[in-house]
Length: 419
Ligand SMILES: [Zn+2]
Image (cartoon, rainbow, N blue to C red; front, side, top):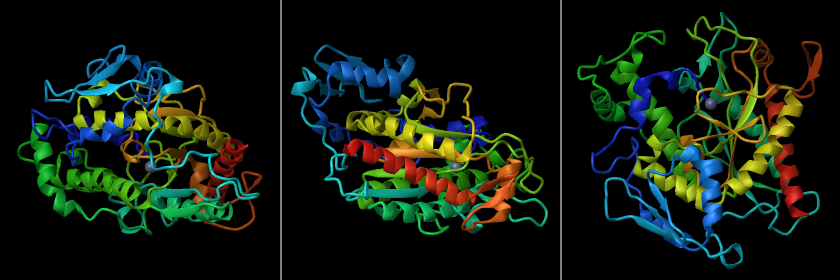
C-alpha cells in the first residue's frame, strides 16, 4: 500500500475519470455486463441486502443515489442509462432463498482430512507489487547507503514462497498469481502513454511534460511518464491479475500479501520511523462518488451478492489474531474515511481494486512498516532458518514469521469451520 501518493488529487482524478459522459467507468475498465447479476435473483432477502449495504459495502447511505430498495426488489440504476435499471428480486425469507451461485467452495464444506485442514481447497497467493527492476518505478523501493535495498515486491514474494510451502503441507492446492518479479499484464508504460495523456488532459493539464526528474520531482504526477507508469503497475497489472484469478485459477480464496509504509520522502535518503503496525483489509466502504461509476457499482453488487464477506470478515479476524500474536504489532488506525473500522481493531473495510475485482473471498494483509527501523534491520538480516536475536528477542526471519502466522490463521479457520 502507499498512503502518500493517494493524497495527490490528480491520481484520484485519473482513476475515476469518465470514458464517455453518458456511461462513466473507471480507467482501463470495460463496460459492465449487468446480466452477470441475473443468476442472483431471489438469492438474498431484503433485510440481508440492506444489512450488507449499510454495514460492509456502502455505509452512511452511500448506496442511496444508485439503488432503490422496494419491498420485493431493488432497482439498481445503470449510470448514464436512465430507464434501463436492473431489477433484483429478493427472496421472501431466508428459508426460501435460492442457493447463491458461485464457483468457489465455502470453508468447512469439503470432507475433512485428518491433519490437512486445507485438503481440496485451491488458494491463490497474490504477492503485492513487482520486484527487481520494477520496484523503483513502483516507488516501493528505498536504499540507505550500501545497505540492501528494501523492496515491497521482493518481501511479499519471499513471504509468498514460504506461505505456499506451509499451505501445501496443510493440503491446499496453491497457485501463485505472479511469477517471480515480472508483471502479469502485457501492457507497459510505453503502451499506456496515450491513455495517460488523455487522463492528464481531463485533469486540465493539456501540455504535460514528457518525463520527470527523478523520484523527488515535486511535479512528477503531471508528466506523461509518471502517469503511464502508474496506469501500468497500479491499474493494468491489478486488472491482469484479476483476470488470471477469475478466469484461469478460480481459487476458493486469494491471500494478498503486502507490507505497509509510512511516508519516506526521497528513496535515496529515506526517513526511517519508529512506527510499525498491522492491519487487514476487507472489501467494502464504497463511497457515493465511486458508485457513480458503472463498473464499480456492478463489482460491488457481485461482491455483495456472492456473500464473500461471510468468509472474509471472520477469516480476516482469525488471520489478524495470528499475525498480531506472531509479530507483536499494534493495530494501524485509518483517519479520513478511506477505510471503515469493523468490530476488530486490526480489520478495516476499504474499496481496493484488487479485493473488489477478485471474485472469491480475499484476505488482504498489511503487516510491517517497511521504513520502520526494526523492519529495515530485519530486511538486512535476510531470510534465514531458525531464529536470530533482534532487539534482544529471538525471532524468525520476517518472511517466515509472516508466512507462518498467515498459514496458522487460515488453517485454524478452516479447521474450525469443518467441525
Ligand atoms: Zn503494498
